[in-house]
Length: 147
Image (cartoon, rainbow, N blue to C red):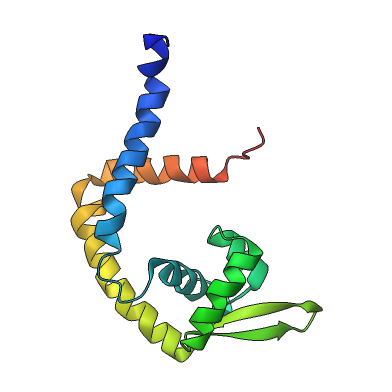
């Protein structure tokens, strides 16, 4: 194997991104009071106007297959944190809606999460670096993967 490929700057940059995320993730999710996948679902719903999203959109937003997300949503619904409502425009579809209990669980989790973010993530970088990182991450997120 060519050393040039092993030491490629793009490989190093991506590796640093993965390593940073791997180290930060457990620190940022340690005191949520609920599973991190549940937190992601509740957070997406909490940040959405009307606190509701179509199940298929929510599954895509949290990177789950529709079948895997259905099982996840079943567990969150059984805990009383979301409820399903039929889509009035499409009988085959349903909305996931954040319940009042879900809002309370999300607020408790966010209190911990925001503190951890400020301690381990945003609090460790300058405002200029924060703005640059946000711009970079938005660019990467919004890039069409097919190009």
